[in-house]
Image 1 (spheres, one colour):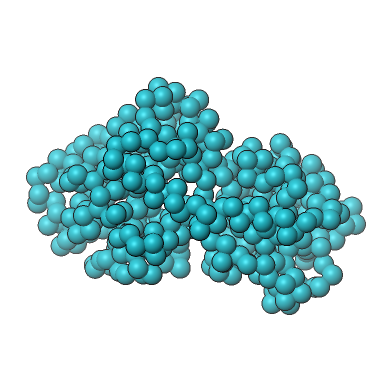
Image 2: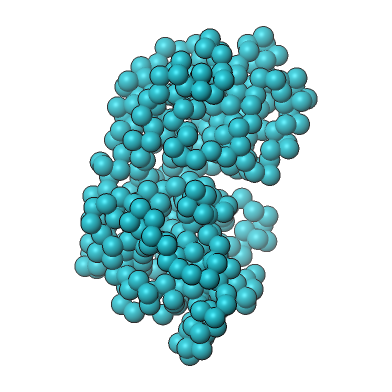
Length: 410
């Protein structure tokens, strides 16, 4: 099959503003290519510098962020592309600039003409899906995966209403939608009952590359990170943004520090909340016990998971929680607050607390540190999310999309 993924790519592939979706998409693209499919990624977070595509690990990568210049102008001479721009602007609504629309539609058109996909898999139900649904695309079939409701749930009310309306307009044009968890599917059914009732839907959990997270001996991992062999280590991995609640992690470690329980904190990631995290640590006198490690490549994270006694996921909301499976692949137990967590982390692998307050989070971390976990059993569970066990679900999904049939899942 010829499959185009429309999504961001990780920063090691040249993407900016990356995250879990980029990690997931790049792994999906690489594994599909390794299994014999022709795969490309329209990378809308990788800056366009005049040429495309690039071949990376058997995947054609089309950088389209800021798409401009002679190639864009040539595309816009096509009346069909100009008409698609008008349709896209109408679909997107007033909050989107004409400059963005012209570049996005022209880039999409050029990628489609060059790669000629059979299936277009759009990751997200917002701006990039609006373009994919109205742009000229020959006979390719469009399917979308929604990874979260954060885009439409957490902003200010006026922005939230505008964004929800965009998603609803997109769903009205879409025939097939994938959810990464049953938790997310239920949220969408509550938000868009009419649209979800009429379309084909599937639940396909996010896989993970087990090879990247093979258990690293704790002593070796700690030596590489400069962490004391006898330290009690709590780990946070994620963007430092409000929805990930990094300050709750910092506050919980401050509470444990005040109790006389010295816990070494490691925070991997970067973002606008970094200053707020540092302020909390200074206020609580725990700055010396928490290290902000900044961004790290995926193949570096195994060392952090191996060094940790417990992985902490204090997010306000997760639709799956890919980092939880990454941690479990190293046998690391998980303490977390997102409502989806019981779907991903069984009781023998961690502690779920249905609150985001720092005090109960601190209590749960302390409990996890005092518990003897079966790390081999935790890893065995997480291996069920490995790409080798899950890739066939995506291949069946695409085959069913081409045949116009519903696949198993939901």
